[in-house]
Amino acid sequence: MKKTFFTYLAFGLSLFLLSSGFSYFIFSRTASMTQSEVTQTPTKAPKKAKVDPSLPRTEICPLNGALFTTLERDVWITRRPLGVMIENSLDSRPQSGLGTADIVYEAVAEGGITRFMGMFYCDAALSGNITIAPVRSARIYFVNLISEYDGLYAHVGGAGNCDDPNVDPRAKALCAIQRYSIKDLDQFGRAGDYKTCHRMANRLDKEVAYEHTMACFLDELYNVGTKWKWTNLDSKGVSWDKNFISWKFKSLTEKATGSPATNVSYVFWGSNRDFNKSYDVEWKYDSSLGSYSRYNGGIQAIDLNTDEPLQFKTVIVQKVKETFAEDIEKHMLYEVIGQGKAIIFMDGVAIDATWSKTARTSRTIYKDLKGKEVKLNPGPIWISLIPSNNEVVTN
Image (cartoon, helix red, strand yellow):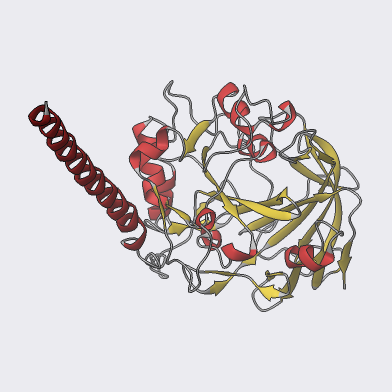
């Protein structure tokens, strides 16, 4: 009996040591892989490639009317617009990649903290595999906006699957993405299998929480779109711009007329000022550049990829109905389908306007108070969605 007991004891001890060693190996290997995923990613991606300035700029970007070279056009016509969700918490700043976007949309995600959707297409054509960061989750109003472009939509998760009981059905972004067959590059979905995005803990010169470290890379996102046969054509051979309507744009010599607006400021949430003032926005007009420079929470905004200030030729403040969703997640709803008031800033002046969007896939159109579509400045465009009753201060 004693011999049998000690035999079983020795066998059990051996099995324990073997399993412990194997567990340690797996844990160490996994930890090593996770750590390498973070630390091997460069702090900064290479800066945007410079296009030969002697090349003629003859090609009009359908998104923002800017002029580009035929080399750039030859690239973008093989693609479709790419929308990327980029966060704006204090720990995310400065962001990477916003200076390459043709259009940037801004709206509150939750708690007064705004989030961006950068639309990349023309200026991104020869930008290379630049960093876009930090990338965060989808919201329903951005889903309704990306639908204007039939674009690729890059994000990390989002609000509400169809069967999620904790999210107001009106706020279920992931459900809408599935229902409307949005060309989805969710890093928590099938796009994540291609490792287009990585945790980049060393992007900034400060430590930030894990949720602020997701970085995606421009060419890699487009490569995944190609794998799913989402180029300029979809899998059925339909071009993304079949029903797309470009905005109207001024000539380079035309100047907008309106009330003076060399300094523009507005808030998203007027409550809890100690916290929410960090998301207040100012725009300062530089007449020598013909652009507005962005300030967020009193600090000039830059693109970390280039260390250059964020400057936009046209700034649109679009007033929308704000609703608090009826769910425990405290999601927000902003009505971007419908109509409302807007103020358009160009050339140092303000133009009172209206906006209208008749359906999810329809283009948002901006008209002056006489009902004529406003011609925008060619070049980068910024659109902030603010609650209808919020004041916009100009001087």
